Image 1 (tube, rainbow, N blue to C red):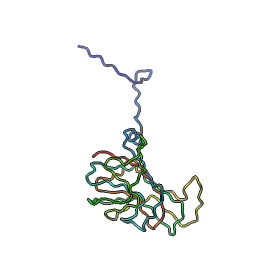
Image 2 (cartoon, one colour):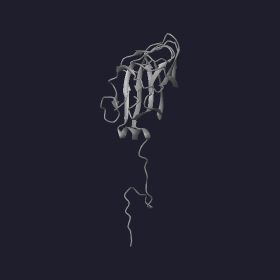
Image 3 (cartoon, rainbow, N blue to C red):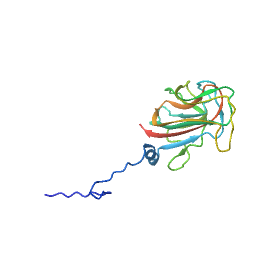
Image 4 (cartoon, rainbow, N blue to C red):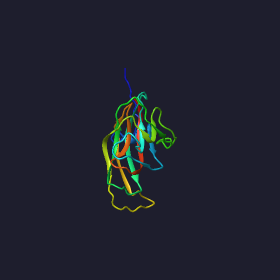
Length: 196
C-alpha cells in the first residue's frame, strides 16, 4: 500500500518549505480579541505615597472573575509641574475578598474591535478606594520640580513601562498607578484578559 502526502505552502526552488512566524505575541493577543486600552480623560490628584484611596486609574480583578489580567503597558503623563519631586509607581494591591469601589471608567476599548466596555469580569475605576494599601512593583518614572514647557503636541511629563504581557493580575488583586507625593496625572493601560 502506498500513501501519498500532499503539502500546501510556499516552497523554495529546491523544495524547502518556507515557514513564517504568525506575528509578535502582542499582535497575536490583539488578533484573539483579548487586548484592551483604557485611559482617564480628566486628571486625578493622587495621594502622597502608596495609598488605598485615590489612585488615578485602577484595574480590579474580582475574586470570582475566573480571569487573569496580563499587563502589556502602563503609563502616565502630566501637564503641570508638581510642588515636590516625585516617583511614579506601578502598584499591586494584595488579595482581598473586598471589592474595589469608585467611579467606573467608560473609556475601555477592545484593541481589535474598538467596542467600548469592560472585559467580562474585570472592572476599571477612576479615583478608586482599594481594600488595602498596595505595594510598588515597578518604578515608571520620576518628575522634578523644574520648570516645564508645554506644547499642544506633547505632555510636559510622560512615564511608562512595557510589561509585554509578563506581569499578571490574578483574581482578588488590583493594579494602579501611585505617586510618592500628590500630583495631577493622566494614566493609560494596555492589558489582556484571559480565562484561567
